[in-house]
Length: 94
Image (cartoon, rainbow, N blue to C red):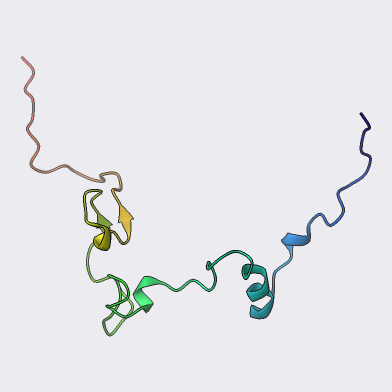
C-alpha cells in the first residue's frame, strides 16, 4: 500500500459558476432531461395542474393527499399537519 501525497488534480473545478447557458447545456446534456427546468405555474393548464391563469400563481392549495390519483399529485404530497386539528374526538381523562 502506498500513501498519496498532495492534493487531488482538478479539485474545486465545480465551485466556479457556469456563467453561460451553453456551458450548462453541455454539462446537463449527459444527465438525461433535467435542464432547463420549467416551473409548473409557467406552463399551460393542459401541461400541469398549476398552469394557466393571468398571473403565475397556484390558485389553490398545493398540498395533495397521498391517496390522490396520479394525475392529481402535483405540489407537496402528504405534508405533515400544521396548526390546530379540527373535528378530532377529544378523550376526557377521569
